[in-house]
Amino acid sequence: MKIVTGNDLVTGDVIWWTGNGWSRHVADAVDVGHDGDGIAAREEAALRVNGPYVIEATASNAGPVPGHIKDRIRARGPTVRLDLNIQPADPAAGNWVI
Image (cartoon, rainbow, N blue to C red; front, side, top):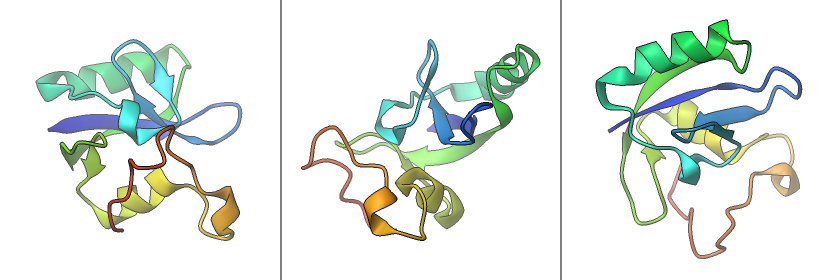
């Protein structure tokens, strides 16, 4: 599966393409198939996201799990303080290992 990620223009937060907008939660990301580069280019041109790119991910019950360690770390939120990490809406979800 392929998903699109980038950064929010205002806050700098890591965001994920949901199919009709952006979310701070990787669990909301959708498979973009072969359309990822087009989505990324369109959204960046419309000034809705900074530096979007397509990544490989694996589907899980808790949503997509980014394939590369860099993006798994980005999905969890800041690494300087654990209390700043992105928390899943469902506490039982998102327990994949970095």
